[in-house]
Length: 329
Image 1 (cartoon, rainbow, N blue to C red):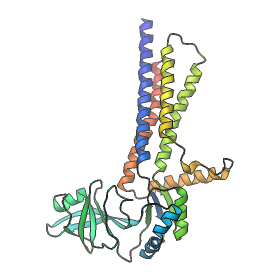
Image 2: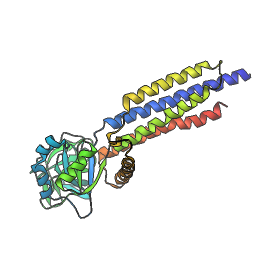
Image 3: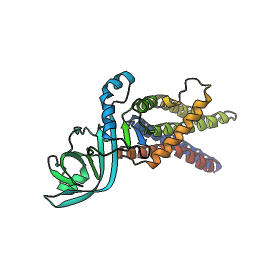
Image 4: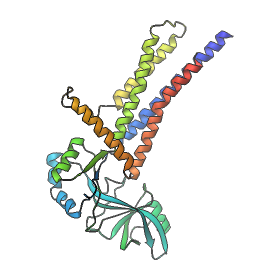
């Protein structure tokens, strides 16, 4: 009877060990999605330093040249977000509430779409799919007219992955309070700000992937420590358990080397540069605070959701370890 109970306990330990590895594998999977997502740098402008049309035109005059010589980002957008706006279809007498983005520059850096709006297209706009349904009863809204505020606009296209959104170009005298830069390095962002005399706090959506990968490093460390501790004991009957540990460790090492690398933001010029690590930690904290406080695009909310899934899957093995101690006693 005791032998049967012991076998059930070992079987339970085996099942939970495999479950922990499966959760870990899903954590790596979600991390890989997070890593492959477009990394966008957002610069939140300081108070009373909104960027004007003149600022944007000054940047654009030397943009192409600087992009090639200084490896600046491939896309740039000056923009601001206005919530609680109303859009109206006068012909059908339909109205809906929308969030308005007024954008100078490339739309592709903000939305997952091939949407193109000419810089001088003051009468054009893009609608989210649900907004088009509310105003026209269809997503085939291109070419139709709407009114937003005091502006009459022509719908140029519909965005499938956005909700309650209207994108248009700002008026000439309007300022923008955020700058979005396409995928680039942290050093290039600082160079961008210095070159054009812009002020603001830079934040990269890619830092979520950095946090996720550090969480993924915890479980293999704990597993390796437990395995080394078990080597001090002799379990001839349960030798298969040790083999399973070896297999799992090998699989995790493979997953780690295949998917995880040290971010360039964590590589100092000299490893003895202790000020670098202090500055890095301060910058990392500022990015977290900035990300929590700032208005987020649908793309950033989607990335935050993937990060949460990766973090939960990374934490589940520790819960299983605690539960296994109760079952395997």
